[in-house]
Structures are given as C-alpha cells and as structure tokens.
Image (cartoon, rainbow, N blue to C red; front, side):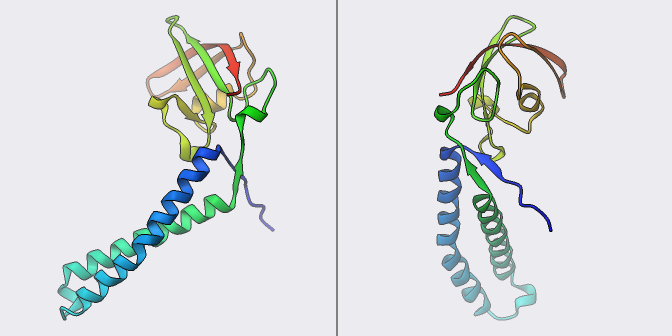
Length: 158
C-alpha cells in the first residue's frame, strides 16, 4: 500500500490554495453556461467556442483536482512554533555569498516559493543544501549559472 507524502506549507500558502480552489469552483457554472450556449450554435465539429469552453473546463477540473490533492496532504507549519539552531522548513536564513553579499530567504513549500520575494522551496537546490545547516556552516550549491558558495550567518523562526 502506498503512503501519502505530506506536503509542508505555511498557513499563508494553505489559505492561498483554498482561495484558488474557491475561485475555480465559482468559475465552473460560467463554463457550463458557455458550453451550453456554444452547443446551441449547432455543428460541434467546427464550433471553436465549444472547443475552447470544453478545453477551459478540462483545465479548471484538473486544477481543482490538483489543489484538492495538495490541500488533503497539507501539513501546515507555523515557523514561530519552531526553535533550534539548524535550518528547517519555515526558517528564515541569512546567507553571505562569496562576494560578501547578504541575502535572506525563508524555506517554504513548493506552492509558496518566490525567489525574488525571498522565499525558496525546501526542494530547490539551495533549499535542499540549507536544510540541517547551522550558523557559520558553508554551503556549496550547483545552480544553472554555476557553483555558488554561501555561509549561513543567521537562522530565525519568524
């Protein structure tokens, strides 16, 4: 029997997925109406409106199924409840790169990742390299631009 892999996420990510799910479910009746209207135009084999509406319906149903799956496997983690001296999911980590440039990232779930916003997935190359590290540990990460070195300068749970 297969085990269901939990999907860690922050409360904010859980709420965003719920909001997306509600929005998609609210769009369902509109798509059904569009399909019915397109059917009324006759020959379905050459009806672009019908095919577009059916395709959109398929996209919505696939998205709803995907989000429901993620929500059912969600393990909501509040970083403020965490403590310790190691980098774990939810930690906010300050790094110093080889050019002495400082950057700060929070380790989050896959659905919440936004590198430009300072949030990286625990599954990303840098996220995987940081998990379990302590302050002053050095980390080498292979990214598309090449190898990068970082030093962990601070770990916070905020």
